Amino acid sequence: MRDEKYMARALMLAWRGKFTTTPNPNVGCVIVRDGEIVGEGWHQRAGEPHAEVHALRMAGERAKGATAYVTLEPCSHHGRTPPCCDALIAAGVSRVVAAMQDPNPEVAGRGLYRLQQAGVEVSHGLMMAEAEALNRGFLKRMRTGFPFVQLKLGASLDGRTAMASGESQWITSPQARQDVQRLRAQCSAILSSSATVLADDPALTVRWQELGADIQADYPVENLRQPVRVIVDSRNRVTPQHRLAQQPGETWLARLQSDENQAWPPGVRQLQVPALNQRIDLVALMMLLGKQQINHIWVEAGAQLAGALLRAGVVDELIVYLAPKLLGDSARGLCTLPGLERLHDAPAFSFSEVAQVGPDLRLTLRPV
Ligand code: AOF
Ligand code: ZN
Image (cartoon, rainbow, N blue to C red):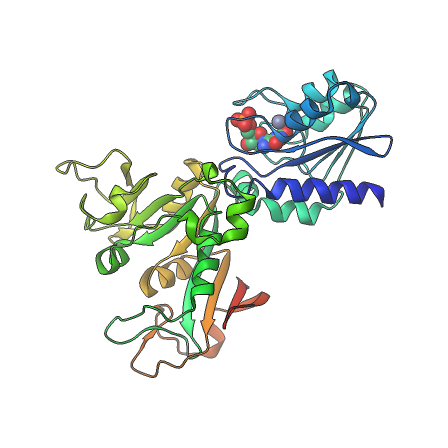
């Protein structure tokens, strides 16, 4: 019971890194001695100290004989920073409670094993589901090599996304669009298509001032990180003049063949991706993005790419903003899929959450 209270606090602290830690996971740590919290911390940014190190620094001498609650197994490897299990042993911590093991092959049980070998009492599995929810992208990439993919869609009550003319600003409410900004800010990469770039010339950036006063108060502005913008561009249609090529952060153009004749701004890279029927092989693209340490992808695209990703079976979660409007029969549909002969063949989903966001609904679904 008491263990749960401290682990809940460690989880809460871990979430504070949600905008900044990628490609590293969100991790929180609480150090307790004689029923008193003597140290706590969370991982803030890749390359910077891990959660345990922050907590140990705060605890100082009081870490001796204490219990450390960590939302992820303490690491055992030399990455950008030294192993946390060694730091915990050196500080004289006598018990470590981890919510889950770290599936990173560099760690994978070795952190807990080394603690145990050093005489530290070790357990794992407390509030594991909550710890899994912290790092869906990191954990999927470590386990499978693939990023976690969230597909965002905005639609009317009759499942339409734009008028026949293409007019689509705005079907959903300002509150829903702020919610989108908040989720966008947490991903490692935003995926879109050249069709969207050519039609709307979007910036695809996170705009801190649009995230809301509560977020701005809790997360200082220097934490700003731009997700990588990844554009499926099989016919090399994006140019250096498009807005997204000039934004802070990086833009990666997923192409069949790179184009050496254009002078790209410094943040732009061309990724060569294998073809499937003369288009970008989306499964190969996901594998490649996983290799580039992209944990979590947020897709904001039109009906074509949305349909293609669903058909390729690479979508882990759908986020649908549903506006209480009817756009009528001539309006455009949610995603392009080949016509089905039988209901039996219809792709099916299950709802995992329904929330109201301003006047709209946000539906969270998983493919079944
Ligand atoms: C921990 N505590 O707070 C985090 C851990 O390159 P590095 O040194 O930052 O190591 C990154 C890896 O360490 C990352 O892939 C994951 O396995 C683990 N992250 N481990 O003990 C932490 N962030
Ligand atoms: Zn560590």
